[in-house]
Structure formats: structure tokens, C-alpha cells
Image 1 (cartoon, rainbow, N blue to C red):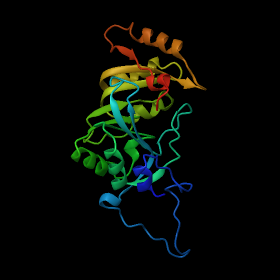
Image 2 (image 1 turned 135 degrees about the vertical axis):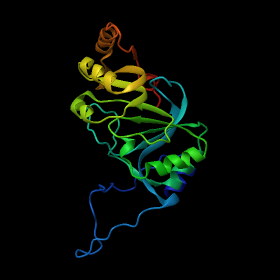
Image 3 (image 1 turned 90 degrees about the vertical axis):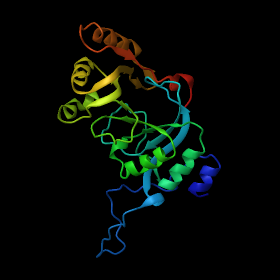
Image 4 (image 1 turned 180 degrees about the vertical axis):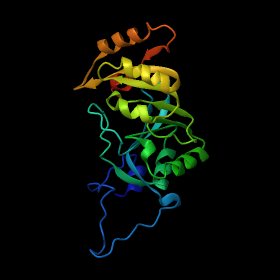
Length: 244
């Protein structure tokens, strides 16, 4: 069954064979290495982990019906990450648009992995915009966000604190920081470098358990500082509800 038949049947698209890393070239002849022709239009390929419709489970828009487009690959490697972003298949722009059209939600969340490192991302965003979708992105905030995005949720990572001293986005509608240790100094750094409408702390889940007490403790300490932004609690409610 090909990818179009999978989509018509409502089945997730998964790669039929192991994915070859993009850095590996497979020459047709040992003496000749050919560059692939640049993709255009609906044949443009994308690294896709999954596309599905559900409710947004965290942050300000919790409970909003949304279509998630999850990309493969990330420029970070957080040990507690709950996404297997290295298991992905290839879908063309046409395949993605056809899949998204099968859902009723108009809010599309671009996530990963890290979506800002994806080739041809703006081509996909232009196409989704043309079909009337509201576009949100979930990003680690180290690379610029395309202008087509309507709502930016960024989750800076404490383990890469030095990287955020060198480069980062300047604005987000919401900041979410996972409490994978003492994040208070990192939160102060992010407050000073990323202007946001809302700041959230999220518990870190390890082996199915969330460090809720530690998260609430640090949340209270952050909110005792005079003249600083107020932090709120964001829980991955979709996991508590047992939905994707």
C-alpha cells in the first residue's frame, strides 16, 4: 500500500524501509557522484514522523483542536525528550496537504524534532496559509522562525544554556521551560533575552513519572522576585488524558 493509500485509509504514514541519513550519498557509479535535482512544487520532500489531529495538550492553547505536523531530526539531543525524531519517513508537499485536508481542525502546529531546520519549510507554510490555516510552531528557539507563523511557542533547553547566550529568537507568544534540574538562573536568562506574552514551567517526565513537586517549588520561587515576569504551570494534559 503506497502513502496515498495509507492516507485514504486513515492510516499513519511510516517509512517502509530504514531511513538513510541525509548526510550519506549513494553514488550511482563509484567514479561519479551526482547532485539531486532541486525539488519543486508538490513533489518537494519532507522528513515526517507523523501527522495527526488531536487537542493541544499544553501551554496557553490547551484544549484547542489542532493538526500536528511532526518533523524528523533535531539540532539538540535532550536525554528526556519524548519524541523519537530520528524515526521518520518522507512525504511530499502534495502528500502532506492531502493528509491535512482529511482533518477538520484549522489550527496547524508545526513541531518536531526541530521544525526550523527543515529544508523547504517556508514552501509548506505558504501552501498551508493559502488553504486558510492558522499556523503555530513549537521550536527550541535557536533558529529564526519563518514569517508565515501566527503563534510561536518556544521551549529553550537548560542543557544548552551556553548556546542561548550566543543566538536565539527575540520574541515568542509563550516560553515553556522543562524543569530538568534547577532552571531558575536559566529562566532569568531567558526572561532577559526572549520577550514573551507568557512564561511557563513544565514538569520533566522520566520513566513515566513527572517531577511535579520540584516544578511547583521552583515556580513559587520564581514568582517571589519583585519586578520580574510571572511564571505559570503547564502540564502535558494529553498524557494525563491518555490521548496522543
